Length: 328
Ligand SMILES: Cc1cc2nc3c(=O)[nH]c(=O)nc-3n(C[C@H](O)[C@H](O)[C@H](O)COP(=O)(O)OP(=O)(O)OC[C@H]3O[C@@H](n4cnc5c(N)ncnc54)[C@H](O)[C@@H]3O)c2cc1C
Image 1 (cartoon, rainbow, N blue to C red):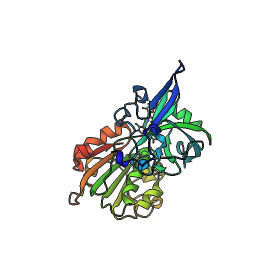
Image 2 (image 1 turned 90 degrees about the vertical axis):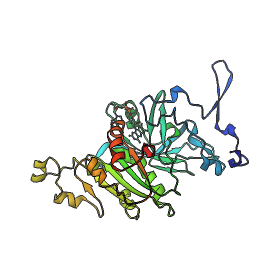
Image 3 (image 1 turned 180 degrees about the vertical axis):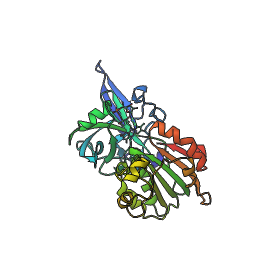
Image 4 (image 1 turned 90 degrees about the horizontal axis):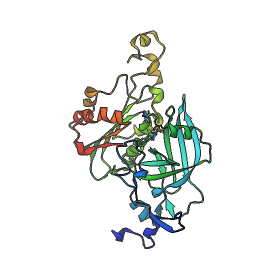
């Protein structure tokens, strides 16, 4: 294993030195995880079971993964989602006084922990940059949520502490797969990295079905990005928007837009496929494509209720073995 380490790599890079109240020097390994590192929200990929590991990519570059221990990141940009100011796009960069011997490696399918005092909450980046040590997250503010209050008050150049990467998802491009990704609301964010990882590798013969569940089109995030993905031969998406509603008489009577709705058609872009009902078992079966070869993998990104409701039914309908189901 040591053979992978560049000549100047020293494990001490991962240590933090601090003083105890008695004035003694205390050296803490960045990989040490304590009960207090868990946010207590019962995450599927809890940090206690998925402790941040050294990054092979960083080691090969002869650098340290800056986020392995809590590190300050500066807010570079903050934007609200068009039409919903409770949804924020936040762009962070490692604080400029952080050393140059570092990179930022948050692999697709992994999340980071945000810490403010003793308050901990996980967030899943949708974009990261290895060399400039930057990442972006999409945040839905929860009414009366303690972390949401902090994030809502953030101004440009404010600093926050993050640590990671946390998760267990791995993708081997040498194994051809049928990858079914089911994403709910803002949880579509981390799935963009999973899709990009496959499509940007010409040698990867895996195919992706991206099934996106949101109340309506206005709450389908990253629509432009999905249309970019649709240019690839091995990507298909479908948007499930059961609460899409225009003001026409027929749609008001139906309680949601109907398939023939002109206004809906006008709001769709080229190649966008939309269903005006929930993603249920029979709909899932329509995506199964049993004749297409490849290892079948299912990824479900959403809150725990969604993961539970979708998990078993989707694995059955899409013929995915339980060991190939990943919950983000
Ligand atoms: C692995 C993981 C990754 C996550 N990534 C993101 C992310 O990228 N962006 C993001 O916005 N959030 C993400 N979350 C949720 C996030 O960690 C916080 O829970 C959320 O920001 C609310 O925090 P809070 O302290 O404001 O409110 P909390 O005290 O956590 O929650 C307030 C209320 O909102 C409910 N609630 C919390 N989250 C959700 C949700 N997602 N959907 C519906 N109800 C909810 C809670 O049950 C509670 O009733 C992730 C969660 C996990 C487990």
